[in-house]
Length: 123
Image 1: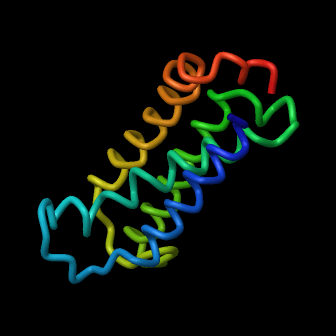
Image 2: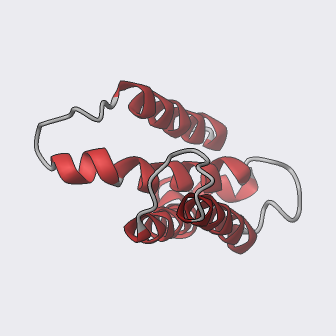
């Protein structure tokens, strides 16, 4: 299986989740789904997508993770300062969710994907 195909499928799923998920969701884990799920899944997806570029700097998982996490923190702190970007409410738990998403991407990229797809090291 091709690495680009799997990561693209994750990105499409994340986009679909973002557009389908409603803030009026009342099912299981409603607080988590409405408040934090996209804040975990979106950074994870961005870190993975950035790894598909054939750029030496972007191939570094540490650089990608730091770039996505810092960008998320800047967005969150802009909300705190009263300048809403990609949302309007400051929530310090969002920063933990961004960190969780980045850590999940690092786990997937360094541990899980190489075990599932050993040929990905060549891609």
